[in-house]
Length: 129
Image (cartoon, rainbow, N blue to C red):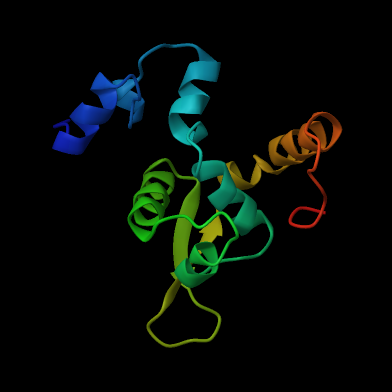
């Protein structure tokens, strides 16, 4: 499988981008290669909360840049965690939905939320309650 130029850069920085480019067989390392950056779990959080459109993700309070959002959504699709679906309003617009694989991260997000509430002063419920 040919490796894209950007994938080569990512692999050089210790971040694999596809199953064939794993830096380690460790399941923790492999999982972090998929969603261990500062944006991907926030996108999954938004999907869990029912957000589905590109504009919805952009409006999240963390302020993800659109180029990074596009990249992460593409990566999540390549990994089978997100799929594009027709938007509910109809027309040509597309939306995003979690696959079963992506939905399986919901309990992990809840555990991270609970950890943050217990150990990080100033955090509060609101986005994931």
